[in-house]
Length: 145
Image 1 (tube, rainbow, N blue to C red):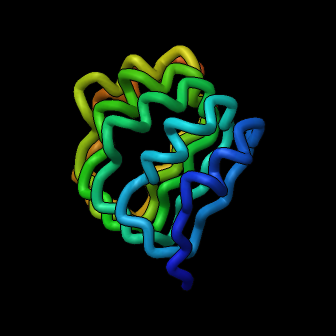
Image 2 (spheres, rainbow, N blue to C red):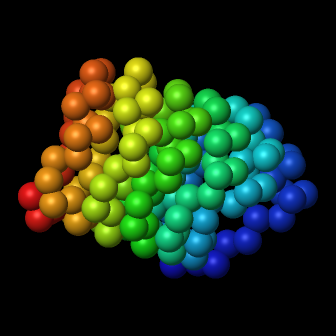
Image 3 (cartoon, rainbow, N blue to C red):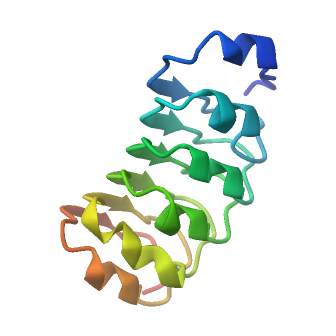
């Protein structure tokens, strides 16, 4: 486990980056500097951090297809995920303490093909899942359903 810090000068040199793995650090949110500087980012792995919420600045990652947020401290899926990340095809929020999906989550219906909700606190099948018409993989093991 590291305490990586991202300086603006370092990130500024990575504007063509498409995949980024920041897992196993101590981030408490997705770094704003990434969202402002990496417009081509398609895959972001932030697993095994200390993220308790995802800030609205993530909406700037319009091309993001794969978002991994497993093993964090999330208690909810941010509305920004359903609202702004329209290219998202794979979302992993396993091993958190999430109990429901946001009302707008069904907006992800056109692109989301894989959803990992394993080991959370879902008491029932989230109704928003029924609108995810292109969903191919759904993981719900380890929930009190």
